[in-house]
Image (cartoon, rainbow, N blue to C red; front, side, top):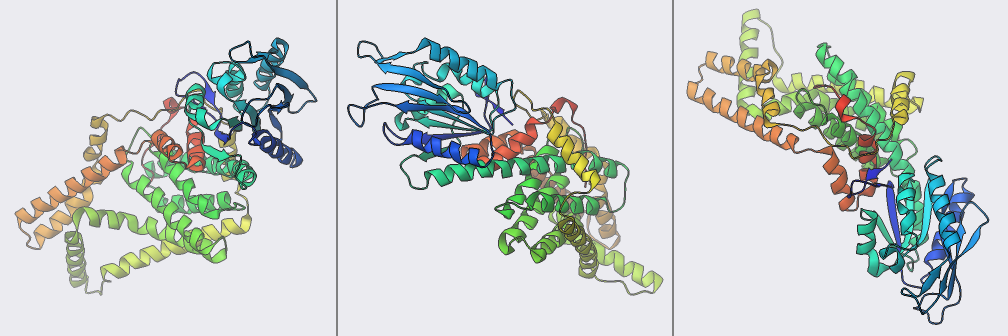
Length: 489
């Protein structure tokens, strides 16, 4: 997965890490240990290590440097100190040629899981050293890139690279190597979450839209149970199972790209499902009880969301209208009608039991059934976009189309007719309409602000590189021009 640099010309790696420190801070040793550890685990590692010769002073550059190209036995003479030059080093032209060839070769191979570069310093700021090969390296879309960087040059190096570093780790801290190793491991987990989030989003905008268009009964329950099962499959084996909370967030972000239909209810539903399920496993751990509880909460929310949303828009008047209608029906047919809390509670229990059963079935199966596996495999097979993915432009007139749908007005019309029939004044009905429209406008305005691409940018900016990686990866595997879909819930 990749993003486009701020300059719009050079793709950048998915995870960019800076190992900082001055001369002699053991940056090279740290990169060498990281590479050796990943190779020992059977992972492919590419990169260049700079081997320093003797230093006249601890804070001064070495008299000579050699380059070791990982994955080969090559150690090449790289730079020799020459005080008559500015900067005071002579770079070997033949080594520069071999470096360019190595960088170009990366583009013909599958993306490297780990690539290390040692180091970016004053020479790179001046466009020399390793900087000339950076465009070719970045175009090869390495998954994790670790670069040794002089601390005082961070801002300038970031400008040249076209993006900020996701992580900055000082080479002098004792936990530097464990943090680097953990980042490499976490990369795989976040990539996996992005795949499952993208697959869940695909279910929402395809199967969900079909269920909605066909007016299939209990479609919300089917989709919520599927979403809960997806979180079980995605979370199995994670070092931090609570991370599954991001699967529905990614799914909701992809739902926001749908150019048709209402996005308010489905996006609220999807996000709340993630919060409820993720909160359960984060609090209670990954076990039978927490998964069953998480699935039950997802189902209960699917059952009650419509009621809660309508209560938010119409307030107690909705309850009064229901009570009046039930009382009239009970008197007309001489039956005992249940009170509102019993009806809502029973409906929620039905959904909770069904969704919990689907969740525990998924946990017992351990792997997705054939239909879901095809969707996940299709997500893996998507071609990675080479340019930034932008959300559909949402003109204000498109948002107003929600007010033209009869389904939008039906709950208000039913409540208003019942209230008028029971003696409510036209003034109270007018205020009910004003409240209904005002709350609807606020909800739609809030949802219209949800720009998935901006989510990824903001998450990365504030240090949440994992969710940003998962979100941007799911977005980059989609062509917005081909996206369709409507309200699934």
